[in-house]
Length: 191
Image (cartoon, rainbow, N blue to C red; front, side, top):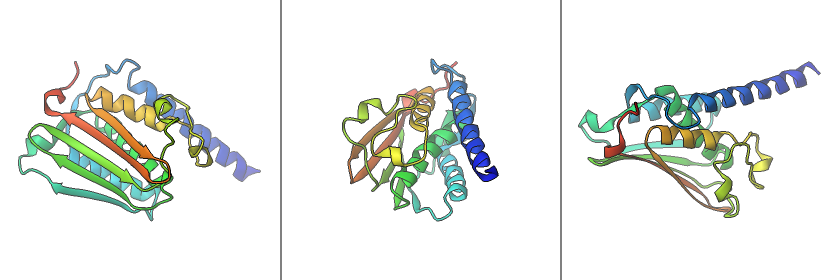
C-alpha cells in the first residue's frame, strides 16, 4: 500500500511540476529571455540528464558541422526552459522508440541553428498530428506509455518563446523526425 501511495504521489508531483513549468513560459509566450548560451553545450547538458533518466539510452548526438565562430552557436535563451523543451522531445523519442537508437543532429551555419531529432519508434498516426500541441492530448498508440500529454505542448511554447520553429514529421510504425530551427534573424531576446 505504501509503495502504491508513493508511486501515485510521485506521479502527482510530476504532473504538478509540468503544469507549473507550462505557466512559467507565459501563456502568450512573452516571458523574457535573459540568458545566452551555446546550443551545443545545452544539448550536452540535456544528454547528461537523459543518461540519468534512461541509463541505457541509445541517444547519439552528432556535432559534425560545428562552426569555429562561437557567436554562431550562441543563442539568447532561458537556459532551464530551453533544456526542458529539448529534454522533453528527446525523452519522448527514447520512450516511444522503446529505447531504440535516437539521433540528435546539430547543424549550424551563418543563417540558422537547426536541431533534428530522429527516432525509429511507434510513430504518430496522421489523425493525431493536429492535436499534438493540445495539453493533455494522448494519441491512441501513445496511451500505453506513461505520460500526461504535457511535454510536447510545453516544448512548443518554449521554442516559440525563443523565436524558434518546431516541425514534426511522422509515420506510424516507422518513427518520427522533430526539427527545431532558430533563424539568425529571429535569434533576438524578446523584451
